[in-house]
Length: 46
Image (tube, rainbow, N blue to C red):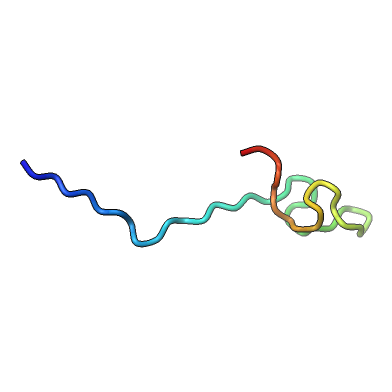
């Protein structure tokens, strides 16, 4: 029995939104979000 495994052509990119600003990069006062530094991406964890 010959089993051939192939790699997918593209790997999905998983991105997480900042839970403080919801991915906008701006906090509720209109300032740069202190948790993500304005990027909108979750940078805590993994």
